[in-house]
Image (cartoon, rainbow, N blue to C red; front, side):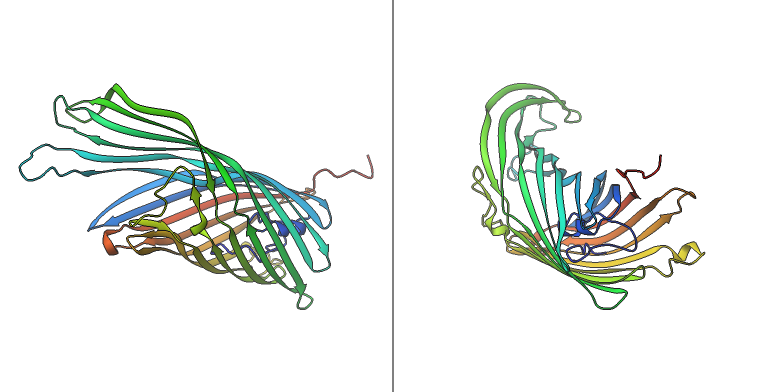
Amino acid sequence: MGGISTGVRGLGGYSNINIANPASYSNIHLTTFDVGAYMNRTILKRDGRSEASGNFSLNHINFAIPITPKSAFSFGLMPFSDMGYSYSTPMSFGAADTAQANRAFAGEGGISKAYIGYGIQVAKNFSVGANISYLFGKLNNISGIEFPNQIGAANTRIENKRDIYGFNYDLGVQYHTALNDKTLLTIGYTNGLGTKLNSIESQGVTCISSNVSDGTINSILDSVYSYEGNEEKLTLPMRHSFGVSINRANKWLLGADVRYATWSDFKSSGNAAINTAEYKFDNSYGASVGGQWTPDITSLNYLNLVDYRFGLRYDKTYLNINNQNIKDMAVSVGLGLPIRAQPGINAYYKINLSAEYGQRGTLSNSLVKENYINFTVSFMLNDRWFMRYRYD
């Protein structure tokens, strides 16, 4: 639904886990399990050339358990960020030099997020909540110079490894009131506190031999320079999000979000090149609109029971390269497919499908334009757990 979440308490008659605003946990009345996978297809374009790549990974594993009729806690694991790239560019030594060399770059790794949160309705129309997250992961960046066809030449490689870990905190509030017997208005706000993460960095510079025929790396000839255990602090920006939604019970929902993050405050104690003439981190902002429509939950026609979703999203990202702001725009559609439970089983199941088509970047100023398609599939279960039976 375009990513709307701040002002969303629930979708249809199901309990949903909305980790973007932990105040929404107060609307969870059944034990909820949600697991999903993610697939991406990306096409990069520059100077009339293009290249495609793909990715498949786990999207989330989330649980939510009601504590009282007006409170619940949630916990789970999901990706926080992902890195993966590999490219090279020819080097020029002048018209009189016939030597061939490539400057190569590669990176891999990612940061995961394990969280636990709690939300409670503290007044008739007011709910609050908080998430505590532990971020952890490894990032590995490699750059070097390769001489693929030069006998006796040694390739040089710089490998930078970072172990990232630390806590992050998110706060959320929601005001919700009935406009009439069937329509609910929800207004929400979330704040991602600007926290500091720890980074332990190791770097090594090595000379390596290569196979003249195909450039395959054979062995390390010499270690020119290395260090281990250099500690840094990464200061994350403070993030704000405001959202509103109007929800007609078991029929439709319309909502909108606006967001802002102070990425100009991002700091890395060991990297002096965060803001340079070539690129810098600016404050980011964006907006989303979206909704859901369910034709008739009492119908015997299955297509009338399906949730139909749509959304639009626009973001001015934190990147500014060559004085060019990098923007990200996308349109999304989705389906919520209910699965009928067997008679006598007090459980509810749903399969959620989504597809998002977007564009990031620009071809101006010799930059790269990215077109992408994201697919997500998830399975959600609502059930009554941890209940004491009255009769044995």
